[in-house]
Length: 54
Image (cartoon, rainbow, N blue to C red; front, side):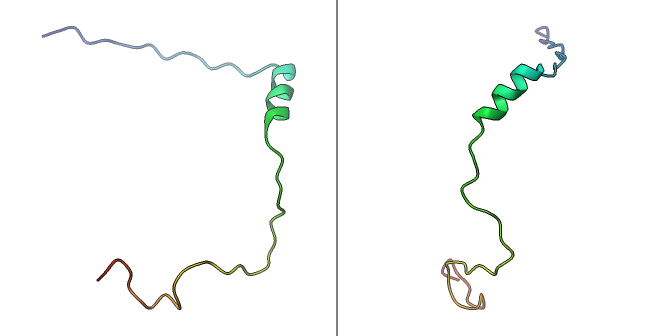
């Protein structure tokens, strides 16, 4: 039998404050605000019809 390859887990390190600020600055800004208003979804009717040709 061939010897199995064993990988040792590597510890993760927290980014420094400077690095965290840079990462945060790279995140895209949200263009839309979330609202509680009802949203209409595209699609068919009341959901009673079965799709996919059944």
